[in-house]
Image (cartoon, rainbow, N blue to C red; front, side):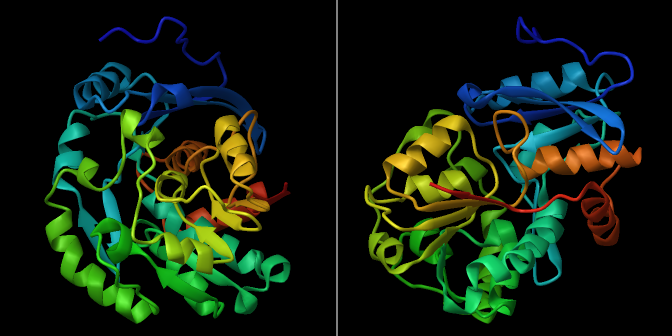
Length: 310
């Protein structure tokens, strides 16, 4: 496998985290950051939906970097205390034997849950109407929004299945997840999550009226953009992975406030898979950390949500 022509290993003393993503290569990035005295190179390599290229990149870099992120796909989703594995995604990473690989699911369940709680003084969740276009991939955020008593519509059935059936409680979301996830995780993930060029395509949806209803649009950036109407005037977007073009898109659609669950690093906010891989590399571990270990590191690093008013 030929690496990108500009690819370089990390300098001596640095830890190197590489996220290999099924998403667009237009979103590639490489940034330097120092965390608790440890210098890092954080890198994202998109494969434009090419699963064969993803496999080759993982296999080529295995053992040569400190931790992998898996981008543009979830290996696991967690619901009701159960962990469901996407069979086709597991095949994509089967060749990784030496470098720890993280898909962000562990950090979503801790960092994003914690971020919702931290944001209560700013957003006053009890006064907010929130649309989560997709919640099963961010169950920590979904549960936290319920705990802070926001008025939430979980849009998994509306946008994922094309059926106008809003889920208005975390109990309803858990019931649907328990029924659907055992089936969905046996299907190719790109059936319901955009990869490559599909990430740039908007979809006209029956759910437009829920965008109009909501004060806050929460969840994955691609999901929020994919089904959004042109007018998002006055809305707040709560998400995590944001690039410069994403910010421009938000401004052009009238978004009033962008809130990210992690701070900006260089030119962008990296995805949870990158952040989780960074924490695992920082801890010197070869596997995912426990929830408490993630929370302890989040506190030590002082990662906090970032509020951007446009």
